[in-house]
Length: 443
Image 1: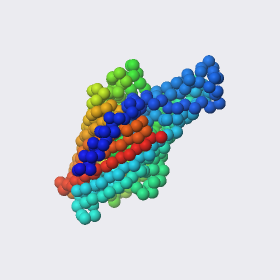
Image 2: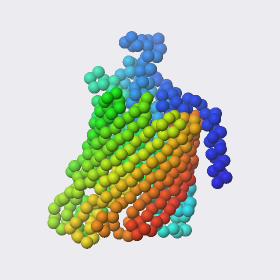
Image 3: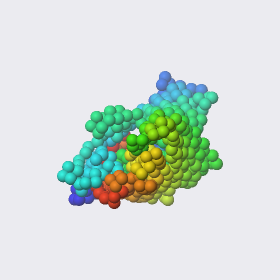
Image 4: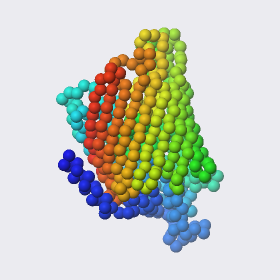
């Protein structure tokens, strides 16, 4: 605890002398304007009546206008290469992220803090654990084309090193999409996820009731009424994680998932919002007893948002309920709970009710430079007709508290405490604790 207190005091001391430009860059994302390199343009040369300085301002404006904030999003680039008259520009950036974690009084069997993975029996082997992880380091490339016919076209690709186990450091494609005219085509974060509703954590997965996952999609979004209202609808690649038993078998899916949302935003920069989201799923499987294919319908609803009360305090929240929606609840992704066979009726298999919620608050001592946050998250599976066995997951809880400090516009230090609970259907429960330190350098 003495070391922990010394670390907090050190972070507070650093914050006092932190550069004010770091506040603008990390809070509003409009400070420390990127350096723009114009290709084949002399400084004294005007292009179509525009001076090089005016072209640079237009280039930077494109990146500020298309910046997307929220959970696990990258900042604006430091360097941009642009052609004459800003018809094409390209930026390459990323960050190096190192997390060091220590689990005590119960260790999670995962490099991330996932309550679902908390062991239910405490042994000498899982009481404590230390990890060091740089797999969340990031590389990205963003291009913008200003087309006369189609308007602004944005292409974005980013990757981390989560493609294998925690020691392999295999590159993994996160996003690869093109945005034009309200359409997003490619691989992106699922439309069911509200990016601005998730608090920042050192833990890569974040609160267990949140729903940050990637998917391949075609999405359309439209903003209207002075940027207050936004509606979005998508067709996304279906992913089914179910328990089939002996009488049912998995088959290829034939219908996309269809998420849709409606959002209302307010504030000077529309930095507060409330969003209502829904998703419908038609999941195919094969009945071995009747030798025929059948489907099960999954559905989910969510209310989420972010409210900025002032520069010094804001809150994040989401609540989700549905049946057969494991890809849309963080703790249940890949859990096999989309549908489960009935042990008392071999011909019956059905979706499982599930729900969760999370709420968090953030206090900014020096906005954009030093802030602390904390919150609680809860996920539940409802027992339906005796489908769940006593040793299966019933409930997970996630509690966090952290402190972040931007010691410069490029470097961030943070410390975090996590506590998790897992309860099974039999009411057997166990806990785990983790303390993490993070150093991140943006480039």
